[in-house]
Amino acid sequence: MTFGPLPTGNYAAVITGVPDNYTMDLTQMPIFIEANKTIDRSFTATVKASLTIYAQDEQGNPLSGCHFEIRHQNGQKVGEVVTTATGSGMIGNLDPGYYVVEQTSAPAGYVITDVAKTFRAVAGQMEELTFINRSKPYIIVTGTITGTLSLIHISEPTRPEPLSY
Image (tube, rainbow, N blue to C red; front, top):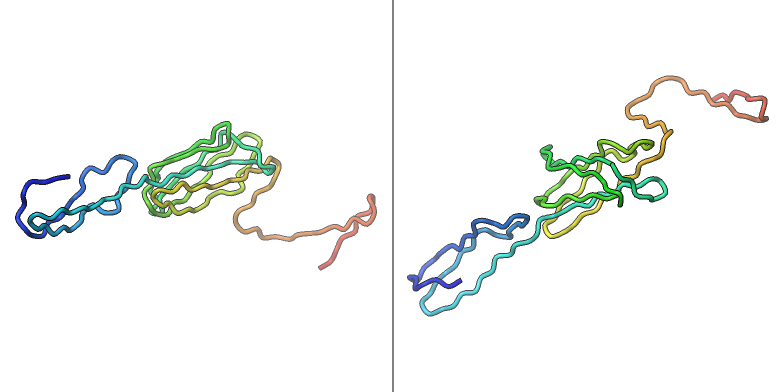
């Protein structure tokens, strides 16, 4: 940009109105103006971070219809993603920082094994996370189980014998 004659002195170049889906390295820069001197300064706009989520079964096949919630580290929900037929979904326009991605539902016949994952969003970068879903029946237990566990050793197909520990 070119400005008309300005008196010698200290000024500040200020960026207002950052384009959508971009983040600025600086929004204000000090400048010293002198008569008959050309000054060249640059502000850098970088595309905001994005995230691609992949959902797969145990054999690596893509799973569609997996639902995910994305939250900033402060707990604020920033979006939802549902995987397509390719087993992937994307969210963009993420500010730099840490996020938690939680799978909230799995397709019929599958159970969630990776409930939540954390990632760091960096401007100009696309992050990728993969979630594996197991086909039923599996028992997924969260929490503490108390009680007694008995093991039975099968020495012959028809005669189980208890083990003592």
